[in-house]
Length: 328
Image (cartoon, rainbow, N blue to C red; front, side, top):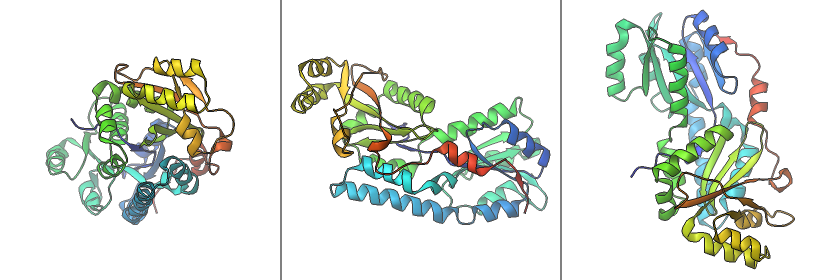
């Protein structure tokens, strides 16, 4: 069974290239405000923006590989990810999706996209009726991830839906990397369709960025405002072990009893890894798709428990200013 849940998710830039400035203006108005959108009317400006993207992606992937390697050497991943979020705000500038019009003066969208073979983002081609067969062939050959006819009814809603779906899909390389930090039993739990679907709904409704960790098992997520949260996942079979750990940490008989009953979880390992002050936090369990297989509980991570302050994605968007068309 395939793992359909994205293990490493973050926002990025969505680039639009179209020689029609009126169409770009319309996109700038209808694209959701919590997306980082960039508008380009000339292929030359778009390609200058994209010139160093493969190198930026490689440098960012190297940072993630280093985190995994340090984890294998004994360093916890959770504080490492928090430091990565705090010290690498440029990750939000990485071009995640390019939406390119096919018909443009002197070139076409496929020619433009074919110059970006080393860029690992997703590609969407906008076509006219006469170009659709070309788009079908490009899709079948793996040159683009999706194509959309400009004559399609309700194209704007369809386009935004495609971008959203592509943005939520697992990135093959990054998913393979972070899958290596999960035990086989944890991967099996995440492959349960009801669990995967519930986690997707949960993350989409709360966070702009998250990563799935195996030690401890759960999702470290961040809201658009920069609030960090921990969604602890506990397979039902491990509840007695967690109850014993909570009791040995001094949480008392009642808490241990609630943990065994699947009514409450304790963030013992998170408390230890972050060196948090005060008592070990506990939280009531949430339904996460299959209560027979998994329990979950959400914990807010206080700002004073983080290794470094983390700038919010909302602040990143505010720093970009208005959505102006780039033509030079």
